[in-house]
Figure 1 (cartoon, rainbow, N blue to C red):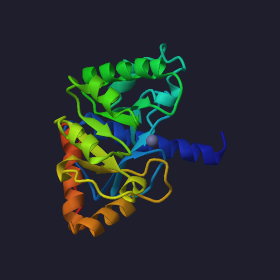
Figure 2 (cartoon, helix red, strand yellow):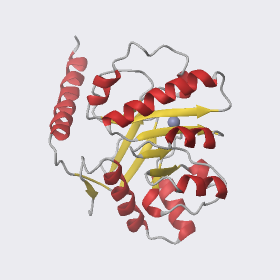
Figure 3 (cartoon, helix red, strand yellow):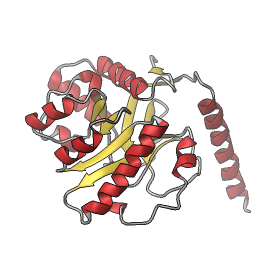
Length: 245
Ligand SMILES: [Zn+2]
């Protein structure tokens, strides 16, 4: 092992120790300003909490929060030997997903199988379910009818009628990135709102600013509301609070 890689191992260990203590304590407090609820990237800002999408199935503890599950694009791969329950016991794995249905991809049967499996997992572990939905509003709503865990619709794009149908679900939250925001603003209640970058390169602040600019809602009010929403879906397990300085 070279000196550099030893150095990296030490840093990794420190981050890991911090996170395992942080996560094992019931009442940890983390102060942030921004939340990126769904990203495929790794960000480095002390005032940002992000939940990174894990593509591979891994029990590794990387030092940040993860969302893990079977993506509909991967539904045909065999994940039957993955120990999902022990994966979900990792406190850093905050959400199950992204999972759902995608009309533009083949094999809807396999997608449905994987989706039902992920619904069951999220329900049993009482973790929020992060949804990937491409033109499958009604089919997904049918599956989620009696689900009682929080649901996050990532990259939410819909017409008014579809939004109204979703709003009937008391535990559904809507996550918007710049792509969705630029199509025009939907009347989503603030206590159901999140922002995300997904695969975009620009950070999540841009989405917050865009939203504030078009709604005249003060930035700080929005930031605090999103933090409150986050505490709600994670059942206050992490006690995130607003960073004042
Ligand atoms: Zn994504």
